[in-house]
Picture 1 (cartoon, rainbow, N blue to C red):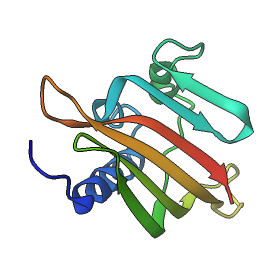
Picture 2: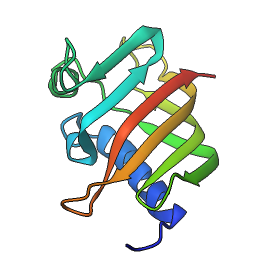
Picture 3: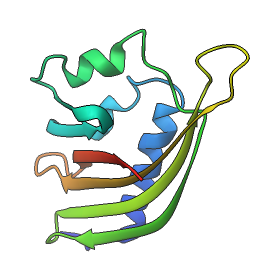
Picture 4: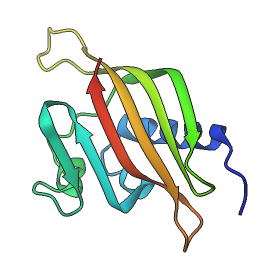
Length: 132
């Protein structure tokens, strides 16, 4: 197996955020089948939850991010086929009303990436956003 390079994981995480600046559906190819995501306000979703991860990402109510910036990034290998990425993010979504300002989110983020044994592709299997 190839050695984990932290830059690979940072690049993948960045690609997930770039996907989310367009549509929720663009995020789905980065996620493992057993991925769990936990969001502020107590929302925990997976492919089998109600609502499911697909329901949320494919919803017409999905609001893409306008911009984001990572800081204080750490990548910790969890063996040769998994890694934890922890970082701070400052992100903005469009305003809810026409004359409002962009909606700012500052958070502490953790994601776990795991190499799929069949395809060799790195997939996100866990993601948590904590306001901060």
